[in-house]
Amino acid sequence: MTAAAAVLLAACATPPEAPSAIDAGAATLVAETALARGDCRTASDEYAQAARARAAPVATIERALTVALDCQQFEVAGRIAAVLRERAPSDAAAARLAGVVALREGRNADGAEAFRDAARLSGDAPEKVLADLIEASADAGNDYGTYRALRAAVDTQALDAASLVRLGTLAFGSYVYRDARALAEAAIARDPASADAQRLLAQVLAGSDDADGALRAAGAARRIDPKGQVFTVAETLIQLDRIEEARRELEQLLQDDDAGPQAERRLALLAFREGDIAEAAGRFSTRLRTGDDPAEALYYLGALAERHGDKQAALGMYKRLVDAGVGMIARQRAAAVLMQLGKRDDAFAMLDAEGADKPQAAVEIAITKAALLRDADAAPDALPVLDAALARFPGHPDLAYQRALTLDSAGRKSEAVAAFEALYRTRHGDPVLMNALGYTLADHGKDLARAHRLIDDALALTPDNPAILDSQGWVRFRRGEGEQALVPLARAYRLSRDTEIAAHWGEVLWSLGREGEARAVWARAVARDPGSRLLRATITRFIPASPQ
Image (cartoon, rainbow, N blue to C red; front, top):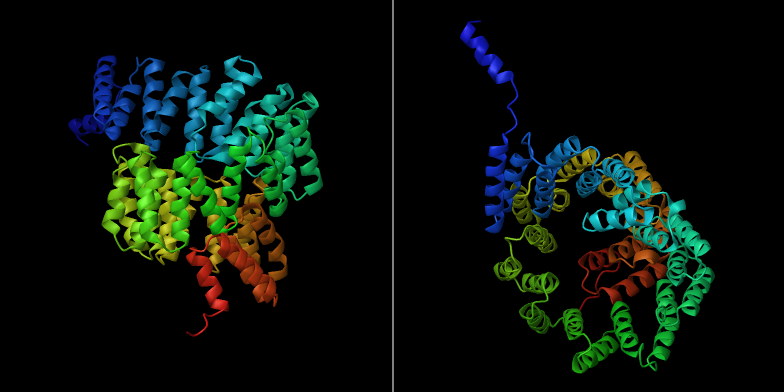
């Protein structure tokens, strides 16, 4: 080797030096300029460059991380978070931000470790630590990981009743009912006059099929706070699927001057949920005329028109909401109707108008387009949409997940499994990924033993999650264990009233010769969601349409 070659090789082997403070200042200026003109990708990259500077203040690195998170540039955010933790190992805010990044990426163990550090470094009272962490992680999009990270960060023995209820509510939303119950009961022990704790206990017990206990707790909540908990008994009855009792409870509340308008709203929503189109239409029409939340009334009247098959009327109502600035939910429904009318370009234009230059909107728009295309049996067309979004937002966990789903819908089964496997390697403790991989394997009859293990492991983490209970039932059915499949499927449907779960539950019942029960399950599900193509297809396989 010549001397010149040796020098060149040494130069190539030496890592590049971190940029200087001057370079960092220039990068910050470029980043803020890019941000002002809506170029989030450049802003994130330039801020990442500034964060690497040797003399970069911690505030600059924190700003860089916040920009990357807001811009949905999670790969960049991960790199900046590592720099921030290295430069500010004793900074509670730095640890908190690093935890949010980890949770957003589905790295639950890393998120819990960072939140533990944030709590230890803050020096604040446990209640404030919990409140700050909840606020920081509100948009993490990872309910289970967030709950586990928060639980790891705080000593529940030191929390007051209100904080225990907040944490218990997160446990309930993460489908860890045993924790939610324990936290609710601990809150009641701290403060027997906590109506919120009694309400949480009622929710947990109703979800655990303890009807008597749930109604006792709901009644206690209402006795403690008659005005604030006026609807708790009705809500509990609905959760228990005691619909007629819930209706009577709400109808009595119509006579209450304060509660009456909300009772009317809840009766309208209940009628909609139960598929009583005439009652729901009448109640929402009345609310529209009286001006009681007209935007909500118009939205549900549009949904009722869809159920009735009047797509043009539904589209007109959704467009009125769009014109009024209601936002993405109205655009999504309008786009869905336009797709059903065969107007794909108009549907996509409707979504794009929400603001494709806004990072969160751009990601949601891409995911919505992909879902609409899958529903229209055009899953192959959805893949370029998601690939383009991933090029703009590299490594985005939601886009990567949707791409795996779309590969499956497109019939590219091996690629779908490989995509879920790749995600699982980076999100090993994520029950959502464990369930997705296990269900996909089971649905295609691949490695059923592993599918069973993955789903059981996911349920060990979130034992009351209806989607995972559904998967457990489905994999048991695929393994020829129909009777054992019924328990998780029945519980999954009671918890969620999800149409896909109803389709699975009915199919298993039918396969066991319990055809009358299958028909009853399907009939109620059709009343609640008459537009479900999956449910209709399942029913048609077993009950072919009568000849005209």
